[in-house]
Each structure stands twice: as structure tokens, then as C-alpha cells.
Image 1 (cartoon, rainbow, N blue to C red):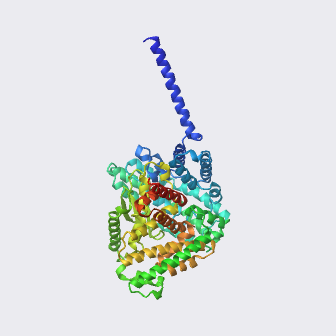
Image 2: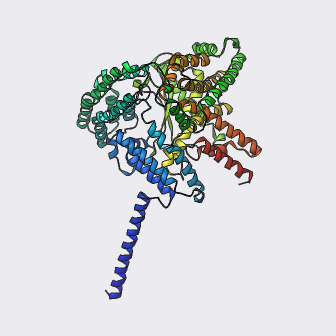
Length: 611
């Protein structure tokens, strides 16, 4: 080999080495300093956040597609130290974000920056109010969340997945001990749940631990998953099931019993007072939550007044609808809806077959509308939606229905869960509206399209805003009616009753948390103004008590979307196409209401300019 060639090879090696060093230096800079490209900040922040939250990684199902699944053996760190690190992380992300000149960013990056800034919110307030919630409650406390998570999200496709499930069972006591540390801090600060929350939480935990281990959902769910895995032989299956049974007896049940003992002792310090006004800085805390959930600056008084006006408007529409069907409108909305709910023609048999028929009818409703909404949507989700019954261990404490979105990797479809505990709480005339809200074109369209969107950072797909998501679902109820899917006048009454509930929420949520309404006052107002079944009304009011302000976002979000749609229609006239409007609302991921307003007005300007 000539010396000239050797020289060039050496130079090439040196240059390659230098290029590699530059590449490493650039990668290190993008990871630790202010990234050159703001998109790298979004990706980096998303990765760093999720890396410390293995439960979230399981939920999103991203890493499994590339063969990484060790996180499925772990729980999130719930310690006070971890909470501080997460808060400092949020502060660092906001500080780095503030160093970019937004005017120099692309339109897409500016949108992402606005979304991230709104989502991260105010770390100072997050930290100030970090102990103002109730981690153990009758609706979605940790004692409910653990079995629900393992049942719904921990997939078992191999022996390793099964071993990861067992690893999680074996450390439930660690997770619950970390949360207990936070409960003790709350107790010292005077953040103690209302007595009824404690009583119902204790009852749920007692029921959970009194079941034989083999009858517990943690065992039966695991057993069902194992049966679907052909690669696990009978001997291994028996060994795995035996280990799960042991962990339930020796780890899970003792951890739950410690909680039962703690809350039995805490009960003497509790009161019947329901609102967060009783907490330290309770008024400021509630205002903070209103901002978080509605993504607006509306005050509690404004929301309360809006609720009263909407209740009156919707009640009038319902009375007119009743009168059209021959009912005596002088009886009042509540009496008429209560009587309607008692009519046998609208009630399913209180049997297993009756409940199975409800699920079949929901599937038929979803199939019908899914085949008939092309005229309103350019964007349609690829993910399927399935309808399932709420797990038995949750039925007495969760709402009438809820939706779980599909996984990022497509292994899990969207699921519409129907609560069939009280058969009379599912009257036939209300089923269409509920299916449109939870399924198509409501939560399923919004959530599944969000998962499937291309061209936006993956981190944006993990972000949610209550007013956007629930506002869209409530908007979807009205859209389905506008499109002619509720031709039966009784189905329309079901829609009006559902919308009436969302208006009542504005009144009772603010009433409970700022006007010192008792649980009983709020319950009476809801029943007297909607005619809802008492069993449903109790769960609703108790939900607002443990999840303040969240329920106000539904109606606020819906009204903003309707207002923006009418603004676009008025400005564009014949050029308005509802499919384009829905593209704007659904095609950019979850957004704050203010940001949606900006995007809709940009869409109007483009259409007016002929673009």
C-alpha cells in the first residue's frame, strides 16, 4: 500500500473520528442543554418524563414494539422525593422553552410550544397544592387504580410478561407505603377526606381483601390472560398461578389491611363537609383547578351563573319535547323524567340476559353511526372500538360509563365500558346519547385519531385537556342529533337529559366547593332538576366532591366548540364545510380551548383568502 494511500486512510479515520465526536457532542447538547431544534426539547422531555414513570410506559405501549419491556415489572415512584424531582423537571422544561424566540419557529412548533406551556401549567401552584387531593377515595383511589391497571393494561403474551406481573404484585406494598407517606403529610396539613369518602373507601378495601385470593380480580384476570398464551405450558401455568395466589395473600392483602386500619383511625378526624373550601387556601386551590380543567379564566361565580342559565334553557326544551308527546308539562322536568325512567318499555330485564342485551344494543348503535358519519368527517380512526361491561369490583363506585383509548402500538382497541350495576340507570332512551359521547363520534374519534395522527410530536399525543376531550364528547352528542341519528323523540329526551346534567354540574360543583353546599344539598339539586336515578345522582355528586372542577369542563368545552363552529359558519357562509371544521378540532391533538379558537380563526382566514 503506498504511503499516499495510507495517509489518506489515516486522514479519513481522523475525520470520521472527529465527525463521530461532533455527533456525540451534538447529541449530548440536545439531551442536556437547550436543544438547537425545539422539537428535540419536546421529544427529550417526553422521554425523560416517561422513563421515570413505568406505569405510563405500559399504558402507552410504545417500547414493547422494539422489544423493551423491563418497565412492565415496575411501578411509578410515588415518594415525596420523586414528586419534588418531577416538579423541578417541569420548571426546567418551562425555563428552557422560554429561551426560544417563538416568532422564529414554524407554525407547527409554535403550536406545540403553546400546548406544552399550557399543559405544564404553573409548577409553583402544582407544588403548593400537591397535597390537596385525596389519593384514596371511593371513585379512583389507589386501592382501585392498582387492580384496574393490572387488569386493563398489563398485557401477558409470554412467560416474561407473566413474571413482570408477579414482580408488580410483589412490590405493591412498596408503592402503597410511599403513598401512605403522602397521606400522613395530608393529615398533618388538615387535608382529610369527608367521612363518607372514608367510609366508602374502607368498604371497598374490606370487600377486596375478604375475597379468597383465587376469587380476587388480580388472580382471575391473570388466569384469563394465561389461558390465551399457548407458549406457556401447564406446569409453568400452575406455578405462575400459585405464585400470584401467594403474593395476593402475603403482599397485597396485608398492604390493603394497613390502609383499612389507617382510615378507620383517621375517621374520627373527618367531617361531613364536602367542599375544598375547608382546606388550607381552599378558594385558591379551586380557582387553580378551574383553570387547569377548563383552560379558561372563568371564575367560579361566572360558571355558576352560566350553569343556572343553561339549566333553565334546557329544561324549557325538555318540557316542550314532553308536551309534544302528550305529557303534562306542568308536572315539571324532574317528575317527567323520573316517570319516564319508570316506564317498563324503556327498562331492560334485571337479569344477566338483560345486561347482555344492553351490550348488544350498544354495539348495534355504534355500528350504525360509525357507518353513517362520512358526511361530517374527513378524519376517521383506524382503531376499532369494543363495548365491555365495567368490571364487577368497580360497579358500585364508578360512573355509568367511561372510555379507555387504544394503545399507541395498536395492540389494544378503544374500549367503551358500560356500568350495568343498576339496570334502571340504563334506560333505552338514554343509550344512544351515551354511546355517541363515549364512543362514536365522541371519545373514540377524538382519542383514537389523536393516537394515529402523524406529523405531530409523540409527546403531544400523550397530553390531554379536560375541556377539549369532554367538550368534544358532549359536542358529539349534539352533532349526532343534528345529523338525524336521534329520530325517536324519546332518544332526543335522553339527549336533553344528558345535556341538562352537564349544565347542573356547573351549578353543583361550584356550589359544593365555593358556596359551601353540603353533599345532601347538591344531591337534592341534581335530582330535583334532572330526574336522574338516585343511585346515579349519588355517584355523580360524590365524584364532584373528590374530583373538584373537572365536571365543569364538559359544558364549558362544548359551548366553546359550538360557538367557534357558528363563528366559522357565519364568516364563511357557503364556503363553510363542517368536515374542515372537524379537521381543525381533531387534527391537531388535544388542545387548550384558547388555542382551538386561534386555529379556527386561522382556518377562517385561509378559507376567506381562497387557500
